[in-house]
Length: 305
Image 1 (cartoon, one colour):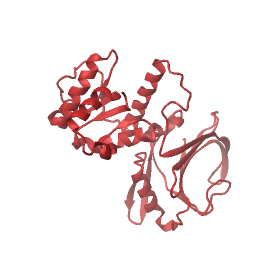
Image 2 (cartoon, rainbow, N blue to C red):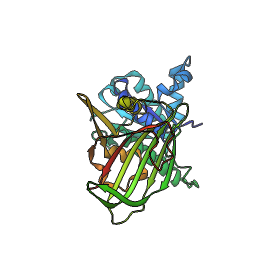
Image 3 (cartoon, rainbow, N blue to C red):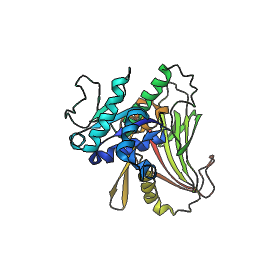
Image 4 (cartoon, rainbow, N blue to C red):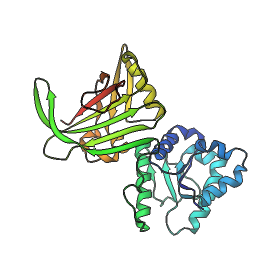
């Protein structure tokens, strides 16, 4: 019986990359086998027997993270043999290889299609895996509504609504733009809520605001950079990064990673660049929003040029 959509097979030396993939898949609602997610379940089991069964019978696909480390490990050899036993009986692909390097792995034919991980971020790989799973469901003729496809997230409440074109203050004047928003609300003891407002497409250029709202925490604005650093680290957001520069923090929005994490804005090709933008701090609820009364926020504005 298949309990997992995806089982990940990797060497411990490659864990840092694989963990980010696993977390992103989990955010997308994918049932993924990743050993650190299963510590209690694996506790006390005969791992040789259990993992053999798991990689042979309990997943829709096995993603193999091929590397020099992978070839040398006994446990990865055991996982690979179990997956190959299943692949031998399958009419369709079962093993999905991805490569950190060009090392040859016995049993993986050079003619087998693979992904080269050079230049592929963990969120991008996770999105490709999600696309593969959704294609399988569609090819099987499953009657899928949009809510039955894999999307973000058990950890997040995701809300998508229609935005609008409106005037945007630009220096001394105002210009019309398609106004898009991503609002990320964090409140104690509840899921993170992500709201995406998308304007209808037109000939106007875009503006995208990304706002992190922290409600119910009573944070001092002077500590907001630290709060945001901890938040993006906890949720493994690889589309935003920072660099300390003395008293200031330089923030970078990595557009290509942002598009991979939020496929709902994939049509905004101009976001493929990186943006270094200063945050706008806000004490209290933003005007005209549903922000909690005691919230604080940091917002970033990205402009199509």
